[in-house]
Image (cartoon, rainbow, N blue to C red):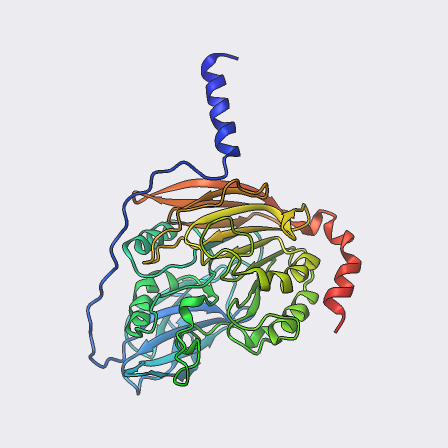
Length: 434
């Protein structure tokens, strides 16, 4: 082996074994500012879409004109709308703030992997969306803790360059933090992407916004970001599930009850017990507060939820768990009960979407053996599930506005690993018993 080849090989080995990447971060970015336009208008704003059961899509938008109808016209040709759907509306007040008219309209049945053109409220601009495929491959874009900074815009620009089918967001959307107008500006910021591909989200701590004796938690979040909880037999918009192209995805709530006597726990047991790994060989789970975290930030905050729910996820053979909250990136080996386990889930913390609070720079040392890669940088992830057995995960750092694939790994589904056969007894006992 010549000297150059030896040095190159040594460098690759060192980089692969290092738990914390050696990277010099660019300076912080400023918050974005949006003009205030209080004029009443029937034109739709803050348009975003989400999956709403098999072959259906929910279109959500806001108008300042209280008389604007909740209709969506749609079709597969531009400006030629062959179908029409009527939806529902809601609104809310928050101290001195009054929201616009929030429209939720479900359209369908829709063809898979097809571009549709649509118009909201009978007037205004035309939008277009693409439905996900019904079979592999399928690609998920993943980014949490977005906020509304220049780093957020950079993350969204990078995601826009990705050929993805569904966006997954594990909590902390707008960082409105009681300033309700920022929910409106967040909707405007993400509209170009969120109106074209389904955004499936769960709540974080910045969505709570409760004021004791005055306002309940999650009023703005539940009003604006309605997810398919009814379609998945949940009683709360804070936790739900959906199937798409051979993938069963479960969205859980870190900020609603999760102990064994809770509605969420009972729902999760029932949901996982119905999963058919022949039809959906992959299971993904998202929630906000990470269970496996070697960053100094938010240490131990997920321990109680992990204690209650990790056995259920393990028994069901969950493949990948995504979380946010910690403003950094970290990927684990397959892990369970605090130790590496080939039949556990891969845990990925991806709370690095661009929030205004900045990055969580400090990690605990030495790192445990289950922590494979960790770095405090803004970015997003892409999970391309190629077939029933293999998926490629990659994390893309926002490096001076250029997309960089900084971490990647092939993941094999547990559905064909033999782990599920070993867990048959556990599955019956844990998931099927009342």
